[in-house]
Image (cartoon, rainbow over all chains, first blue to last red; front, top):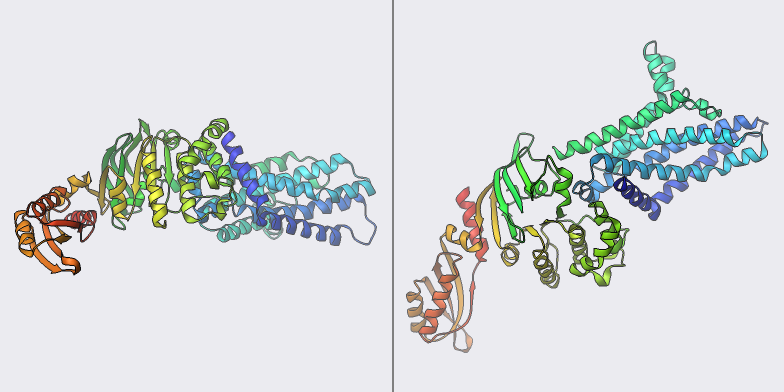
Length: 241
Length: 312
């Protein structure tokens, strides 16, 4: 566990001690704020619960964008600069390396989500939503973002440079986002399959509305687990190439 | 002690190394020599635990690379040609991080930090960001990360490449200090450097070991001859007589300013110091003053080229 925490702490420090981390964070917050203002806070009167639902939908999309942008560095940058040797020649296992990197991504996601909290706080002060609803919504966002970070971690683990990692992570994440559209045009059994694989819609909606959805938790945790496992396997395979 | 038995590694169908077997004792400094594509880098990567060999075994003090990977890697310190450094960290932070990454408790690393930083001659720069350091200091920083956890084996890939003459002399001292506590394996294209710092050499060619031993042993095996140039003071007859006594051949003499003579001669047994000693003794016995005597090409270069040519 100390090895995982060691890697996570260093990578998180690298995010916050370099311009890149702050650029991503600022850009994500700016986009989130603008979209919230444009689509959630409309000029027409709305229920505060509806505004909150829209906030979680918008922030979910932005969190995925931030996850893809921040995770492309995790392994690909270390490979480009040669510092991957430090991890590969250390006694730490590939599982520890992957979990450490993933945890650093989660810490960044946590920071981003914490900085967005002023928006639902305003809705709570001016409307009638509870702290519990907001908490459940953030749980959903965290689960969604963690799945995005796992996808980015895997893409970074299999890529030689950051740009390729970014493209792969964006393509895979976009696929999961667009699954709900595919489910509308396909027939059974693919209809159900794609509907189940969709990041938004079925899995995130209950959280947006303040309901804890066990199926959603299982889905996001499973996606995260699967991509972290793939990342670990790809690192192990590199030793045998 | 590191033991390699029947080490082979293939990249797909392409053979990188095959059937390498050698043992390196504790506190021994061994140089790995070979032309490009000889298998040096692959061997170094396997020894550093970065690659799992296709065949054969590698053990450090009994810990096997495959079955006890973590234990094996904890006993290795590795410095690649381009030092792996996080430029946004200070020297001190980086070495502390690397020690912990190698499995040492933070308190133990902190207790050893000053000693390692001093050993790598980084004390004056320890609070500086790595990104602000010169190439030479970055190399030293790479050395510090490789030895912070007291490894049994330190592997240095081209440790002096890109260093200026002053830094080379300092790095040599750092490497000599390392060999007091650990086994050191060095790969370098600068053969004089290998000759300067290593106790023993392993020569690779085409993925196989073509020779191993001390420089003198390799020279004896390589045989052949060495061309030397001497700056002498004395008559041409006396020099000729001395060279003939020393069984030197192809004697060419040229007069220089100040009554000196430059002699180019060929000595038997390239690399054998004896031949040079015999020549100097013969010259002195014939009343010739010896100002300087040097090999036209580096001795090790001649041995190396001879061995790789022989193997090809």
